[in-house]
Amino acid sequence: MKRRDFINWVGLGLIASSLPVAIAACSSGTTSTSGDWQTVGTSAELDKTGQLLAKDSPVGSVLVVGTSKGENLTAVDPTCTHAGCTVAWEPPTKTFLCPCHGSEYGVDGKVQKGPATTPLKTYAAKIEGTSVVVKPT
Image (cartoon, rainbow, N blue to C red; front, side, top):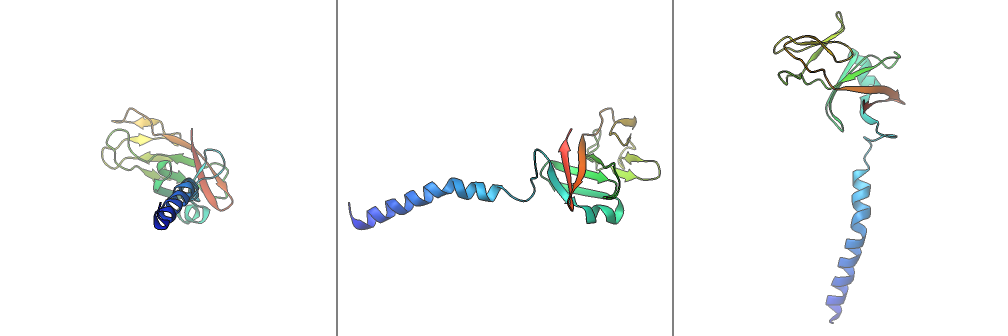
């Protein structure tokens, strides 16, 4: 075996053996927290308007309603189960309203008015430090 071939094999072996470590380091981003809880935004973002829409979160699209000072945060997948439109939070009536066909969902994600018949997917939500985190229920 020539010296150059030996060095190439050793170099290739080093790269191949360090690949799993590199992949693990890259995939352990800051979006994950303890357990199955996933970060979807910051408490500062939530407190600006009382709601936080994270379209590309680690768990999918999530709409969190409330404030970091409040005890109860509400988190749902804001995709209407009837038409696929993004529902909006209506604070005066405390409902999620679909702009496409008028379906209404309660704070618990259950259908209050059709045409939708399936409830919204819900999440447990809490504040961890300065992060808003959710976990599928």
